[in-house]
Amino acid sequence: MPRALLASFADNLSFRDPDAPLTPGQLRIEILSGLTVALALVPEAVAFAFVAGVEPLVGLYAAFIVGLITAVFGGRPGMISGATGALAVVMVSLVAVHGVEYLFATVVLMGLIQIFVGIMRWGKFIRLVPHPVMLGFVNGLAIVIFLAQLGQFQVPGSAESAGHGMANGQWLQGAPLYLMLALVVLTMAIIWVMPKITNAIPAPLAGIGIVAAIVIGFGLDVPLVGDLASIEGGLPPFHIPMVPLNWETLEIILPYALILAAIGLIESLLTLNLVGEMTGKRGGASQECLAQGAANTVTGFFGGMGGCAMIGQSMINVKSGGRTRIAGIAAALFLLAFILFASGLIEQIPLAALVGVMFMVVIGTFAWNSLRILRKVPRTDAFVTILVTIVTVATDLATAVVVGVIVSALAYAWSNATRIHAIKRESKTEAGAQVYEIQGPLFFGSADGFLEIFDIEHDPEVVIVDFANSRVADQSALQAIEALAQKYIDAGKVIHLRHLSRDCHKLLSKAGHLMVDSDDDPDYAIAVDYSVKTGIIGGH
Image (cartoon, rainbow, N blue to C red; front, side, top):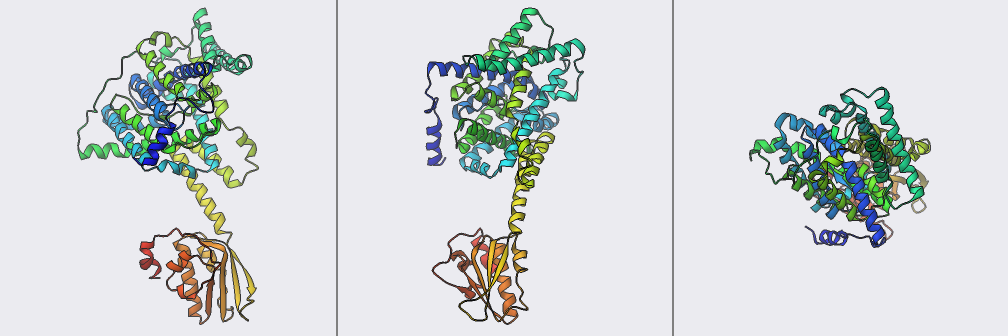
């Protein structure tokens, strides 16, 4: 592991925020915030386990192990990780065809891939995700969280219907539906009002506690956490995945591991950026990759389904006041305590209270200002935001982000490709010479437009091409310059190339002797492979 990464890892591994000293009051808030998150994790982990086609404890163990390790070693204090739906929908086909043991082996390999990404410090490339993609990511996940809660408005008892939300099961009707809705609204009202009264207790925890007390006190017949599945169990046992150690196994699990690693890291790093914006912190991308990888590797050996950062639970934690690693650690330990000692109590919590909490998370997560600015921003940005939102809901986060980045990159390339033009002037130093002052970047997208600027047939005998207001970006640009020079030479005319960088001087072969060397030449690098210069440019 690089020394700089180790130093960053050590600096960030702290249980207290220097900007917010850990007072007894803050410690209480951290622990209560962790309790709130743990309560919200239970139905999510159970439901995602059903989606993946595994036992509920497989999801709960993953939420505990991934949550604990990333809370201790992750790149951003305040983030919450656990079993997620984005990963579960990929796992379901693997489990259905090959069984749960292959899932555990895949999770181990997924973690090793993520550790490799962290060591290589590739997490920094999350900076390439444009802001419209971030908006689409936030809005898409908010909609996904909302849709996931609708499954709780179905008659409990079917594991399949509980896992797939709206896909199966019978919807509540009549009085049960109205009672469920009333409790959801009551929970949301408590969460909204509580901060105006006191901050001693996190508002989501107060909402869950009050509504649970009402349901238990009045004996109301409403769906409970225990109706999803029993969460009682023991400590997660060490378990080596029972799969053949051969090439055939690797061929089965590697494609799934790569997809899961990509989805997990993309969701984690985007959540890291989002939490960073809310808490005013930056950095930690490579450390988060390492933490996610270590967490998933360990989880695979302890019968867990793997996981990544959870935007919903992270929002609950941050808005409940969680700012240090203590909240995440407390959430994981509370979850383990629920499994070992308090399953009967937790199973009495009404699902309506947890749905109300998640609905408030949806309201707080969705970027409502994006609806207002869609008409003000460039059409391309608005299109990318809407596209990423739709693709996130329809497929998965990794696909949505990749699509968004590609569309944004193509739109940027097209925009720059149309900017290139030239200002034609008479030369002040050489009588009768024509000067083309190139304006705009010259790269693969604008190379054809660059060649169309020149009127070789009607130009005078001497032509000067000035690149002072341009920038030669890549190999396609160099080839365009070579082609232009050759055309003027074939026409029996003289061409001079001015204000090209030292890189151009080195890389241009045929047109190299046509360049005018001066003291005010710009100095910048060109994105080109020097090893192919002779074969491609020199052989042009």
